[in-house]
Image 1 (cartoon, helix red, strand yellow):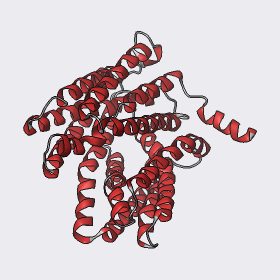
Image 2 (cartoon, rainbow, N blue to C red; image 1 turned 45 degrees about the vertical axis):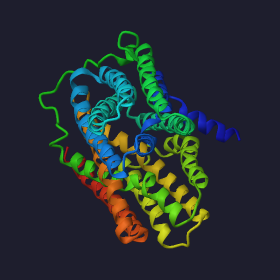
Image 3 (cartoon, helix red, strand yellow; image 1 turned 135 degrees about the vertical axis):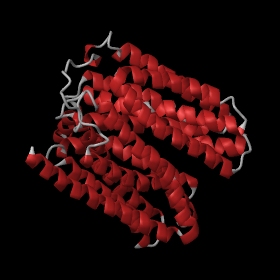
Image 4 (cartoon, rainbow, N blue to C red; image 1 turned 180 degrees about the vertical axis):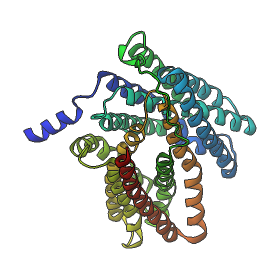
Length: 405
């Protein structure tokens, strides 16, 4: 018992105070994440739009997220991660207030695009901030801590959002917007450059040549692999719940238990696992292993008869895959950067996820609708295995790159 206690203590020790404060900002922000999980229901139930029109609104969100990722990266390198995070939190909060008052379809589409553009500008700035507040040795754990804050906040916000949505959908927008602004206030008092020396820019002279993310061939290959990963990963939140309902005949309560289990296991074990394995292999090796595990979590559906037990096994394999891949995925991207190009690299990373969020669920649902879930799991599970191979080959390519330096 003492050994386990020390393991957890070591996993959480050594991280900077600023990294902890930034994770608290993320928790406050994510604890109010209530609009997006219920946006489709709001549009179809409260406003009476068709599922097709609701899909167009979500597409506007996705396009805005792509623009926000690019713009956030550019502005982060120009103005610094603190000011862009502050702007995104306040601007996103105000946009939630606005969109909650709109009823005209075209107005909702435009506002959704603007909201996503502002909100997603936060991500590259946040990744740059985590990198700034960490060292190479504890960077992956710093990203894992941020993920933990997101998971805990998301679980809290999702559960509370369901209760509120059953009473009044409009309250979701007010709460989501308010928590955005509260997170901005916390960010100001805890991490403003005038109040926290750690936030101040590092006086690092600009070299004659600053590598661009758009000409970094290995990074572009990495981003493509990240896109493939995210493309298949988003099936977890879109087509998989429908599959559990229609093919496994699980009730909403059992599906909810499986989703909650995912977050609980990550919260309980991710920091410890990352602490135990970080630095023992190339980060791309761990990402490759995680991708293969996620592929297995999909393919298992085609090998065994359905039911809650198989869904549970798949969920546990999936969680293992997430733990091995996602924290290392962020840190690997940032390890190729310096203070002069960090936002650009983080922006491309954000854009890869945003594009995948638009294309992945749409593609998965169309395959399931036209060819059945069995075909979809073969495609998506196989694509995860191809992605795992891609990360492994990139590891070898980067090793050759290092040997020439």
